[in-house]
Image (cartoon, rainbow, N blue to C red; front, side, top):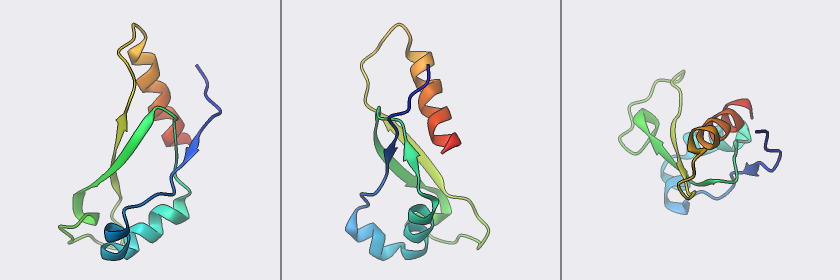
Length: 87
């Protein structure tokens, strides 16, 4: 299952963009693209509001998938993961 309809993530909550300027800048520079089934991306870890990240720390993201239960759910979730990791 290959999906070429990736979605570029460009919408960032204004409060978080201001409060987490360095993280916001990294995410925008990364040109993050996700599968169309991803309805929301949430930020976790030290680059979130708790702070305390090191300059070389990664960005922890959770992908929230908005899709109905299907018999092939495992394939859909694998496609979502691969799309994001590859782009």
